[in-house]
Length: 66
Image (cartoon, rainbow, N blue to C red; front, side, top):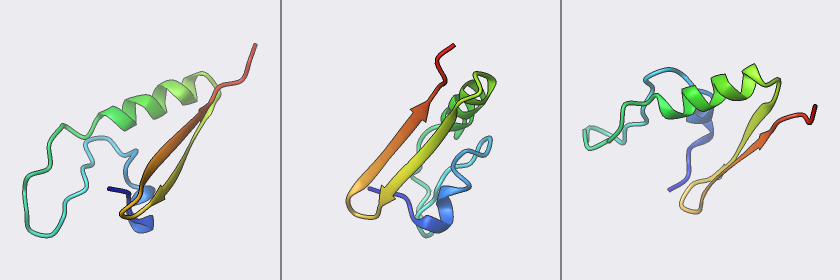
């Protein structure tokens, strides 16, 4: 739960998945947040992350009104 500060800039990279230690139980392809970021950018918006370890993560997507 939550994403460490040093990993937050990496989570939007294509195929990136956070791994914990030497345990390989991470699910998914690591493409979802990359796709979201690409869509938001194409709409001239922004995506921000607010995360605290052991608490949780919130993403805020802002898209300008045209």
